[in-house]
Amino acid sequence: MKKKLLAFFLFAFNLTVAYGQAQQNLLLQDAGNHVMVQKYVDIKGSPFYNADWQTGTLTLMTNKVYKDMSMKYDEVADKVYIKAANDGLILLNDKVKEFVLDFSGPNGNEVKVFRLGYSNIPDASPDSYFEVLIDGKAQLLKKITKIIQENREYNSASSTKTFIDVVKYYIFIQGNGILIKRDKKSILKALSDKQPALETYIKENNLNLKAELDIKKLLVYYNSL
View 1 (cartoon, one colour):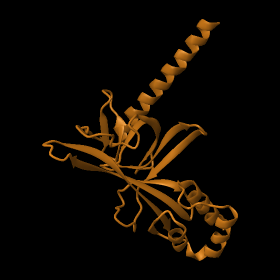
View 2 (view 1 turned 120 degrees about the horizontal axis):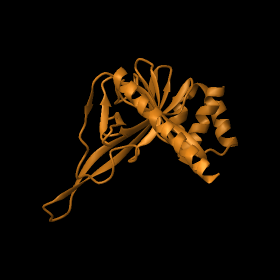
View 3 (view 1 turned 180 degrees about the vertical axis):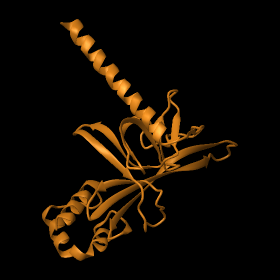
View 4 (view 1 turned 135 degrees about the vertical axis):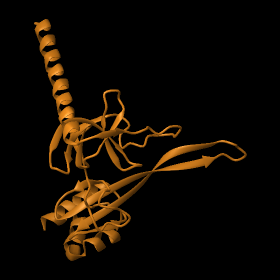
């Protein structure tokens, strides 16, 4: 019985690997030529949203969807890569307009959605990816940009480089992106058309708008009005 179960699991695993490889081959064919990119060296930390390869789904500008892809999102270059056979990085010539990363957390499985194509957002271009925290008539977007910071110790001839996160939040509404602070005043200003109802909701639910989770709750409520 144990041998039969082991054989079944090995078959299922091999089938999954074969499916993933077939999907990648189709993707590379549809996306045209691809180029290899060099990894960052001699910098502390990681340039990626997640240092490990992450499985997920991506959608090309042609609206073709590919599942079970191994991906990494470079938050310095603002590019998404897929895994090469030698564990290297492949940058697709055909842009990825949306990608979804699958995560397993303490609260079960969750997904992270990243999307480009937004216009009228301060200090961003339509080629910038944003994490979509809340979708709807008012979207809550998050942008993490990694910068490389160089530090030199006092009286030292050498310096160290480190990846540093710069985090910004936006509310995208009526075709415009509004940069917000994580506080009540800034958020209610961006959602001023429903301010009285939102203030009541904040008070009744004891929301702390410095917390991302509570900002998400408020946007869900706004979109329900």
